[in-house]
Image (tube, rainbow, N blue to C red; front, top):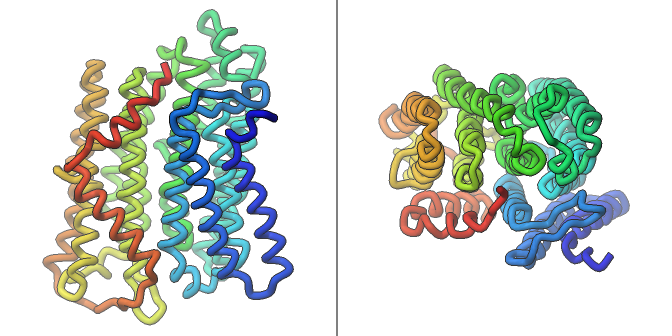
Length: 471
């Protein structure tokens, strides 16, 4: 009980969810109030999480819940991302008539599950967090019930996610059976030699985790869910669950099973190579921007996994750096999408961007910066993200992985440049509305500025992340 100050963020979030639900039920027309209070809640717990920076690592609940530098940093990134996702999508929710009390409460519930995943040091605690996250996401994906695409995306995500959860839980049971515990530290101390049962358990859990970050060949849900879900949910899908899943990858692979690196390293390398290649190639024929971003995210997760495949602290740090910059790049691009509106209708195909620069030069510039950064073109933030990954991979002499990453970057640059060509060189089609809320403008301006000016002081983020020592 004396260490409860380490989980004030989670306790505040859980209490706020219940309180907001009560307010929403008993106070009529409280959607706006609930939404604003939800953003305030995320801001408060972000500040609370910052207070833990620099403190010694602590374990709670019989060493099943860990508060350390990794969890503190990733939770801070999670909460801050949640704030800007909600700020950028307010007007969209109102126009699509899904600005209801349930929406922000479901977002907060999912974020609570992700927080638990990030700090989990036990398979059971991790699974509890995963299911809390997933149950909220099932509903969010199909939140716009009258839209057949949204209902279809929710059903697809539910069925495939349930399958992956079953495989993951079976993997947990195998590890418990062969290692004698679900606690990561005890598992690590109990493993003396390579065991086929443990290896099979690791494979099943990695399958479940690969599904959560939409890594190939467990990516099949992503394009349909990204396209069919409301854009406010798509931006949430594209950013927050991947932060939590990457943290679990790090904890699961590097704490209990670091001695079995020869067993799981090949799997991570395969997932990385397959994701980078498929994500780069499959996006070429896409015309819907949200669907294209789904394949783009698959490719980017391949790069993040490449850092984890290295098996060193530098590799882990490069993956976390990549994820941090990936969050900012996606926030910038999706904020731009929220501005493509005419008479309460949003547009989301590449053709709808035709000649955008003629009437909206600043919006076009923001999209240019985010797309160039996603393509990894210097001196923008995306270049540094990929540079750190390549450095970590090459230092361990994994040249084939580096070559595949480089080639997939070149291929992926084609569809990013095609969008830019449409924006700047095609004939103008239409002029979009300019009445956007302050939160959306703030989200777009801040994220774009960070991407464009990151080269001025790139070591700032690295100096923070370099304190994350796992091995």
